[in-house]
Image (cartoon, rainbow, N blue to C red; front, side):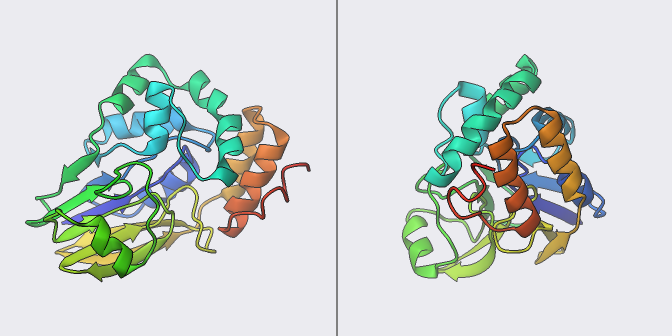
Length: 239
């Protein structure tokens, strides 16, 4: 059995399409279907019909409930700039789907003790925890998971924290580790491997422009999508 583990698609349908070309029998999405990208409706409608496992991300909650996304300071203005696009595209049934997504999920079909959460067991939506075994040991207090898939940071990592293996597949739609290719993980017969796939980044940027996103936000996102790195604060904002 081949299971795709994806996270942080962020409305980037061209990136998700490239990932879905990987042969698979099942799929798990770790949250943030929407936010920043030009085609949130296409991504949500795929999730609604894929019969995969999906959990709630902070941007999903923001779209469904009209709450702030709780993203890092340097991204708040960009999230605000793209938010009207989501409000225009997402139908009532799309928002209802996002609103009912769980914050945690057991993945017993992969193995006993396998589970997933968007950010952290201590804060399922907003806490940023990178590849630090020491930090994760604290985050996992009271958690019985043997293998825990997480997203949110947009950076791939695989580490042991106490007795739990913590795996972040990276971001499909907005990698931030210096590699702009869509990132994901594949589970096959209990083995987890990291994957990357190139996708038409310029198509995503073109779609952002066509959706009338503000020029400074498009420039910021274009720099991020092309390089896989967050632009210096303000560098692209006034172009």
